[in-house]
Image (tube, rainbow, N blue to C red; front, side, top):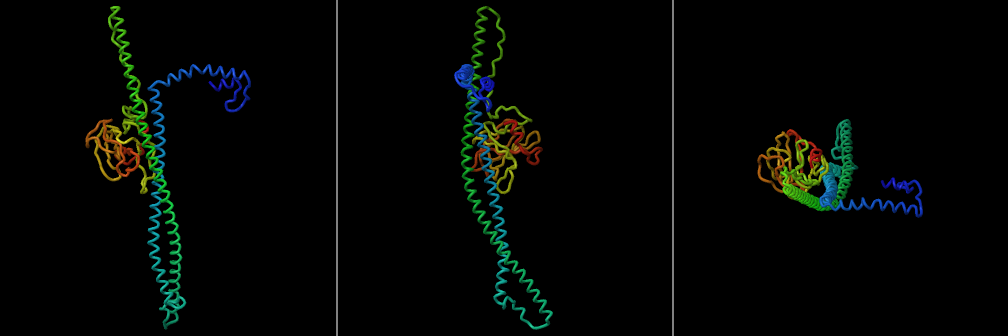
Length: 389
């Protein structure tokens, strides 16, 4: 609309005609301002709606949390890459040092032989006998000398490689220190953004509840007025229409989410995540799930009905294994605590609470969630989770 108005007064939008000058242009601009006054006033009134305002705050907070989750994953990947590179270099150094020690023995023996001999001749060449035997022994010594010389050259090269590799390890450790600080900073920012998103979600749900309650009371009052009017006219009362349910909560809360493909979101609350399937992890491992970032203590719920068992310790920390009635297996790792013990659960039942136990200690609170179709190998759960969270 603005673009059409600008064109009507020859005002360039993205370059083009020259603008008019003088009173005519000012009059047109004034008309535009007057024409926009009413819509802007209406928009201002609409923006004052508490539910709409709460929804906007949820959207803003969730966007910040999503961006923080992406930065956190990037920092975590960089940490893993540096750790794996340092490990690789240290393995090369260990192998080089072992080979160097073997070569030092050869070189030391060579040095002793040269020292004892005359001009590099070895003592066992000093003998009397068949000249042919002498030639054969000289050839053997020449071969030994060639091998020893090669050992000297190889040892020198290995020492150079070791010096370069040790310097590389030192450099990577400095990078690792900086990356660790960045990781810690991103952890703090993510936790703050997750908490803000959770508060915004709770506020939106409270505003939705208030709006629904106000709508219910208004409807009850309307029905009461109609009954009173009918009674005053002695008209038989008709069945009252059902009360409105009110606006539904908004945001990324998964509570009450409609199942997609039979699943519901594993997190009942505010959650942020990225597709981290097969992202690098320390020790050369690849990530086999999706990290659902959420504040500590947020409920984890059964994505389907089935039976759960529990596992404590190791890299997974507090873990829940859900064997669904659909035959699939689901893992929840790094939980802060459990909700009840091993048992049969219904879809949506709380099985534990978000934490950072196991090798997630020191990082952001989250639930590592895995999907194993038919109880077999893990597949990328991101598409399934993205559809329901």
